[in-house]
Image (tube, rainbow, N blue to C red; front, side, top):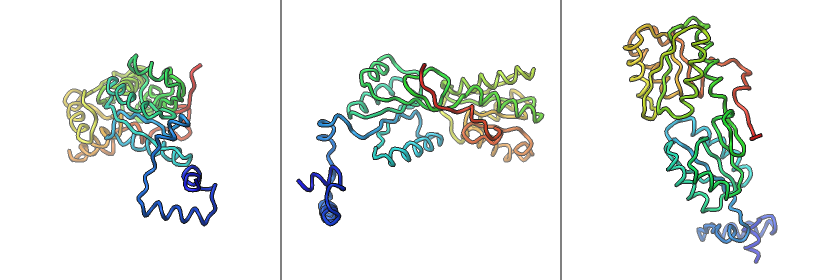
Length: 275
């Protein structure tokens, strides 16, 4: 009984007993079994996290931020990866919900009908990230991707770069929204909008391919808006490899770590609840 109390809440036994029980559990290699607690209390102290990519460094930072909060509050994260596929997201969600998770963090706004139905039946808190404008299921924490891209493009144009090309990969929803923001800024400035896109996921070598394609199709290119760091960094290195000064002279802006946004642009990212 004393050990059981300790396992539920160590503070319910004396300090001396805490040390003895902890030492015994270490010797035995004790592994907690959460199943009885889940069944009796209908809670798992776990938060499900669905991420579309494990190679994009942005999501590594997102997960780190999530776990700073869950760790501090005695929760565990259960991570699932779905590769931007709504059907795979549905499959992963089915598995996560079978563990009776207490909350759910999603990275997209578009889901299959079955995914939406499972979330409705589960009745748990849901946070959707990476976008604060599109309608959300419950709560949202994210960015105004359209406005961020528009402002970034406007700043590059104001610095004298008038042949700015948008680099995109995978052509997921956020990439398209950023492209639309870029195009709006170019129209506002009375300039033509150019895009080079690839269907595959971004990586640190794809930026070379997109830059070379842009140079072939738009020889006067002197600015880049990139959907993420992966493409921008490699494009920047390729400029250096070509042996000219473009890496220093060209306008270059990318999402996740852009240096062109002015300080205090807090309106671009916020938390939202549905009306």
